[in-house]
Image (cartoon, rainbow, N blue to C red; front, side):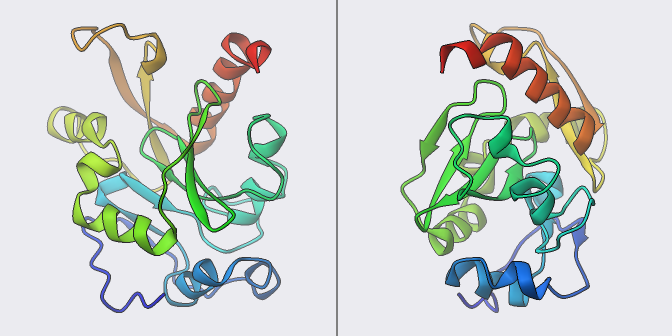
Length: 197
């Protein structure tokens, strides 16, 4: 994948250091190509957060959330150890690669869905129509009413979106650290949905 033509808007973080070589070699070709040009980025003011190809305890570390101490497959039964959680949206729902296709995991319910697109197609659609494709409506509302989302933050919405019965439901929205938001999602999933899988 050539990222030379990629035109990410609203970039609030871009990893300056190169990818971890050992981790990079374990990734499929399209993801390797991406990381060799862009080693992690937060675009659309927080709407798309592509993790960095590093194996550290940082909030943007692919290694940490794939195979490390915060491995998402240890929490969500519908995630396989081989699934690569390369990115997340503004709410902490996870985009992951499975057999060269991009899937999405709901952090609240643990449900997974095939987005029926490969990584280059995913990037292209995210650039063409980020608000719709990346479900950025909560972020658009937050940016208009509360302020900016900072690197290392996700949006926290209460009540949980899976509990909201209609568009008229009143909810509270705030920024939380990636760690706190993901912890909340993991706890919510375990309390409300883990027994039905």
